[in-house]
Length: 299
Image (cartoon, rainbow, N blue to C red; front, side, top):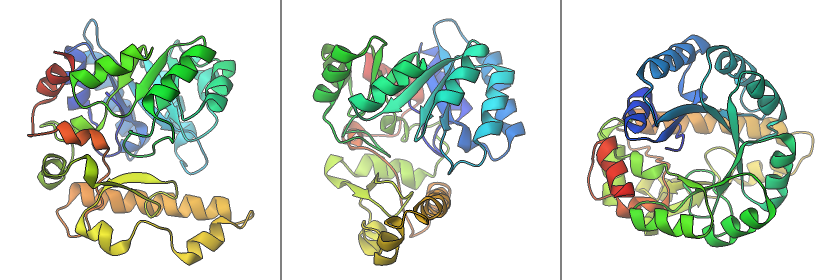
């Protein structure tokens, strides 16, 4: 169960664990380190044999809370950490001291080899069918290339909305799949009913890439509001992003603004609907429980 900003929560993770799933929640879903600490404790109390839980860490400078989050995870303990958008070395070194496995998001072979050399336990291969921040390569090409050149397990992320998709990814050589978008329309998800219903009403053809959310291209549902504001960065943003001195700060500001905009849309029913999702919502036909969604993917 892939980590999704604002969507994932302990209720989803617990239902996932009951069905034998490894469930992950973004650490950024918790405003304070104390809230993160209590979430870990809740998941530990609910742990069941066969299931597992972990947290996603944004490990670049845009996440001011990163070091504190890593410290709490290592103190309290969890089964695994998924790293995204940065160098995972510090996370790997510290997590391994606490017997926590680390899986790293990558989009190509170059970064896969880097994280393998740093000691990652598995690779999350983010392909061009993933929701949110996706890769550029197809699932087949990416999985096969990484399996041929890496020694650690490859977990495919993107393009899975039904059992047939799971089987295809495994046939390419993946050790498992990381699934996100189908769980947005779960009864347990921490978003509005409008967001959930959008995942039912819209499909793969309605997913577009936008540069207006986090500073990094991101997939969203092409709502009327997204059409109105456009998907390309403004000319000012484009100029600033090309400035070597200012680029880092511009990205940090855009990341912060994008998170706030996404939170507004996810938690309130407004006309400013910026809903992150991937093309696998094509197979979402109704709002179901987490268990029912897992059953659909497995059986």
